[in-house]
Length: 358
Image 1 (spheres, helix red, strand yellow):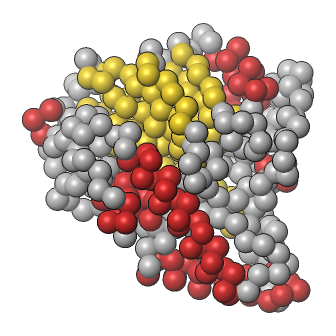
Image 2 (cartoon, helix red, strand yellow):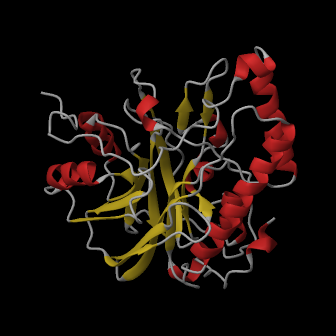
Image 3 (tube, rainbow, N blue to C red):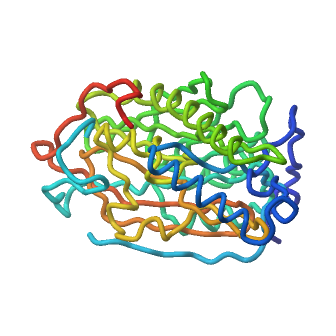
């Protein structure tokens, strides 16, 4: 019997507020602009945001996510806190193949997802050592804790005040985790979840993120579109500043999750300024052609890469892939990261102010 939330007596949680809406799905495309008008406005907004190095993303309403069958999109690649190398590049000196490695996965489950069998299938396919999960619920956490207990040594989950259904996080790890701490939101919606593990005697900081979604109201115009971009950028700037303070200078760190942001916008750009590497981009020349989020908007379905695994130059990205399954509008992203010999891994510098990232 399929392992769905319903089959496991896990009912959908009752949110204490209206669930988040996908910006694209909330818009009266046809009435306001006709066929193609939405795509044109989105293109204009994206162009403006790219030129100004702005932040963008997309809100989600999981209960209406497409349940069409999804396949695995495998795209394995070849085997700084400011560093002088191209954005997304691996460390100049390759890691020894005998060096210890980690398989890191990030997965926004979609809080309304009741297809537990598909969640477990994606996790099994990832063969991950540490899972960064977003939009868990008390029900899904109970389910996953019981189903993963024989494979994952540690399972930790937390959220804020229960006001938003999409606010929770979880870590599942085959390694012992320490310093597990939920950081409540400042100017953003969800906060972030941090922990640490030890790999070959080296402490690694782990930061699980879910940045504020992009919001557009019904009946918007171009001015409202640009204002929404500015609001989202401001929220992301505040969130990234808080996250940056938790990256210990000179020590390995991994930041992964749902950024609700395109790769050239301010949130990922900020991590590149700090010297972190976009793992998927480091192993794929066409990284942005592999979307991690899909939304059946009309008349133009949306598919964007907004889920990332970033790491300091203490690691080398060996491979990375996107695993797509029904139930969530997000795909699982998994990367194999190998430790680089310490003498060839320059340590991160102290974070600058968020305003310097643009």
